[in-house]
Amino acid sequence: MTLLEIHASPSIFSDFANAKDSESGIEEFGVSSAFSDNDIHHYQVEFRMKIVSSDGALVNFKYLANFLREEKIDDDFKKSPFVYVNSPAIAYPYLRASVSSALINSGLENIILPTINFQAIYNEEIKADLE
Image 1 (cartoon, helix red, strand yellow):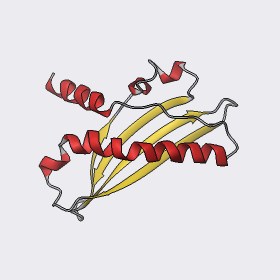
Image 2 (cartoon, rainbow, N blue to C red):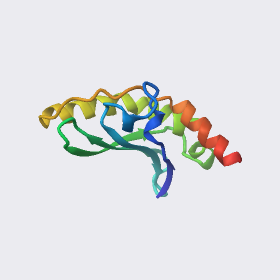
Image 3 (cartoon, rainbow, N blue to C red):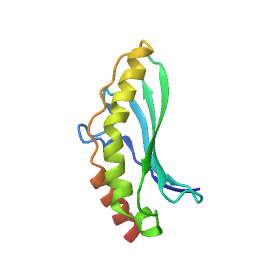
Image 4 (cartoon, one colour):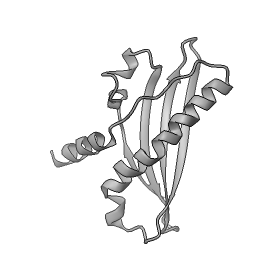
């Protein structure tokens, strides 16, 4: 399995400068894409978060979004903005709902995840690779 990963700091959230210093409770955030060597039409986007609730409970959250592509997944597609920008942007609203539901169902205070500019993250990654 090939794994492509973006290591993003909590500051990627557009609604505030640094999530660690905010009241959001988001301590860590990461998103990655994985491709199977055996399946040429499916791939996954994985989100990982560490949330600390207002009462001090630590929640490690992992969310997998599965994608099906009608065309064969080739190396060009694996490097494309669709994988790094569009796919996470498509899956993110579902992550937001899942986090809310999990926290509420666990009896913890709800956290509404802010928006993320996945295009800006991608641009930063490209810029860093070029330097």
